[in-house]
Image 1 (spheres, rainbow over the protein chains, first blue to last red):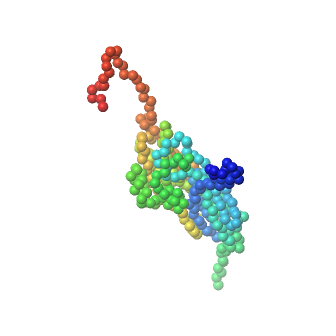
Image 2: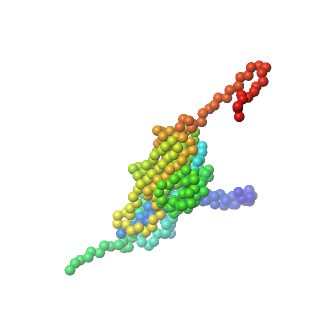
Image 3: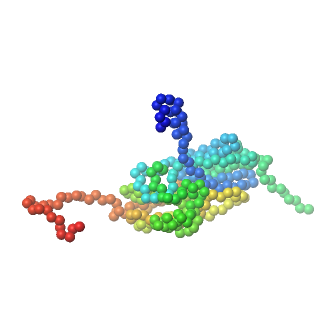
Length: 132
Length: 163
């Protein structure tokens, strides 16, 4: 705790704000696919539910957060602890191809699927090949 | 809760970021502690804890359905098996793959015996939890402390042969 906090209220505010934004996140492993009309991101977020998912877009960057409930009891006696449980977060920079307004997401069985439609002008068009 | 976990020396956050759990060094460490991965390739990290009643194991298996997971248990070991085909979605070009979990088998030794007839397993939101009630013999039992009866006037002596 900052010693000057006692004498200077502004220092107290600065310290507490810094602490509240300090959080640990897990970065979910994700697969990336391109279709003719869209991109898809499939992210592993075990323990997350649809209610805990939030997507925000700011300045061409899509930030995805998935909140996870604590699920271990206080009186647990640990034998082996190989993974931690906590919220997920990952940011993706969106290219010009992506239609920001049309982005949707679904979450099931601990997998988050994000669908990013391509802008119409950028979609691969199948060209009809005529014979003759 | 994260702060109280006993983390075995294994680069787990790194493996979560890159989706790769298998690592030769890790396998040697785990084998020394009674954990035997049967197949190379990615396999899931596990958490194992206990309370007075039971052992609890958790593994993160995102995207696995019920028929792709198999759990079996003996008195002192629990085995988790998963089989899943990972195919590229129809019509898609794969740009990048980070999620590696397909086929795996992992066994974890238990330090005390369990009652295999009462083991339960659930798979919710990609998290497998196995609850293994301790065998009667493994549960703590209260021992009654009695005074050793001593007739008046005689000195107490230890029985011969006692440690």
